[in-house]
Image (tube, rainbow, N blue to C red):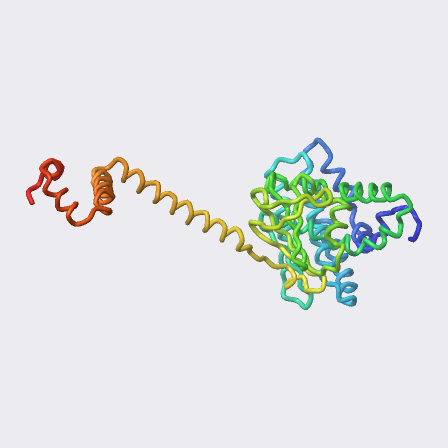
Length: 345
């Protein structure tokens, strides 16, 4: 492809595209979903009709991935394709309950197959952020696979990069848009195995060529995605993007292309936020206790007594013994002392 125009179909990450789309009529599904009429029956029929063909395509690519020891790639691809079909359905004019029913039908058809205990294992997680995390990880690993091909096609740098970014938007924008309600205003943090972390706001997805190139400039075989509810700490500008030096994150997903997809996908939890949170609580509690003590000392009877005792001690601490005796024998002081202490000695 050296010196040729950019063509998304030639990208290595699209190796299996024709295997899938050659056996199903994805445009037929899009046509049903784009209709303003209620096409629930037609869409349900499409799912039940073509799901066996999707399974057949999956079995074909399994053989390829197993022979190349690249199981994770096939797992990422089938998960993306299921997400893609569900996304097309979610983009339709159907009522929400019908969309959910069709999505559940698809998930149920694939759950046992993907989460089986066969020699080839591929999991499909269904937590709140799973779809977004899968798409981000697929973008990263696709770029690692496609990077050399893309750079070999560059005759006009800005034009080629622009075409690649447009391709990513067409491929993934709808998935991110339809999952925005679960993640809106949150931060996507991407960590590599060199200990580096970069962050991007959700509304900047899909990741651009420039961002992907900046996080894959070194040899990194493992990436982790975490999602923060609040703006990460110590954001520093880095070539138009943001890099984290410290982070409090909610959850992580990682995927290594060298690992089996069942063991390669894992969750870890950051302790940075917990330590910061605990420290904040302890400091706040300590300051609160000091504040209460100051209020008590200033306004309560006990505080007044302590205050008077302190004043008295300050008066007497620099006096010699004779001066103290004279001070105690002074009738004015005795009257003051008796007047203050109303109880008999």
